[in-house]
Length: 294
Ligand SMILES: [Ca+2]
Ligand SMILES: [Ca+2]
Ligand SMILES: [Ca+2]
Image (cartoon, rainbow, N blue to C red; front, side):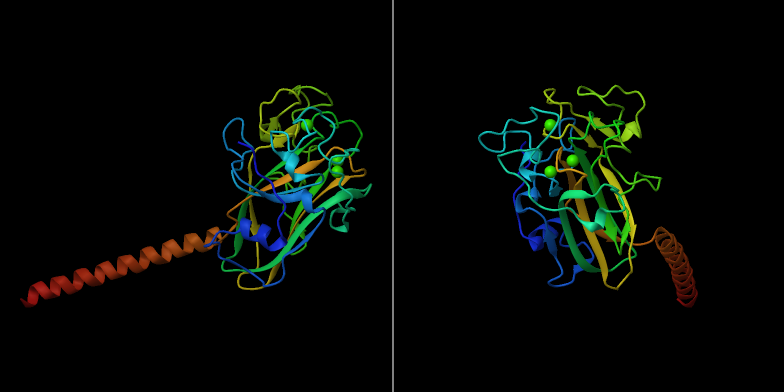
């Protein structure tokens, strides 16, 4: 059940996100990755049951080392979820992440960012919207919550607009906007939480979910408007807020898909029904005339 996060090229990461019938054509040569090579990768067998990550297969971007997202020790010297305070960034001599922050996330983090991991590409969709499923997890849980300390940030920017929002709101997803209360170094108190129904607790040493991350969101499905038939841009970006400690990860499910507008769907079915009815009437008329002639 170890999610096998491994470093991959930008094009391989993008390919891992799009299925063969995604309706999304990537603009050749547009895939770009900025960040530590070990901070990103593809993963499989993430699991969707009670002990799984919530997404089975896809791409992980982190502000530390993507290999630590797994449940087992990533390599000798690593002890999985043995601490609530770090994965790979916090003075970790195993794999220090030396990457800088990104200006992409500056609007979400007034104190700046560190250890940014950014995957971007341009694409042409054959429909008006794209859908994707994500999970955000962090070592900010539960000890950095409501502590006055800034929590890590991420965004999914399509044509410059961040759509990684708590469902039904304009609030960016983070440990501060989805949790079941804190601060505490143990299990979430389930008091004073934010959108607690979207949170999965994984305090260190409990081993309830197969990851180093001390807490995760549930799987969140995003539907994002795009420009049909035109070139669009998308950037997935995650970074530590303020300092490089206490890493976070963004899991993006394989299978990003272009889909039609709901109104187009409804119109399409209504028009289809009318056409079907008129053809049926026509067919009946013809068969009754045929019957009369014979
Ligand atoms: Ca941990
Ligand atoms: Ca870090
Ligand atoms: Ca952090």
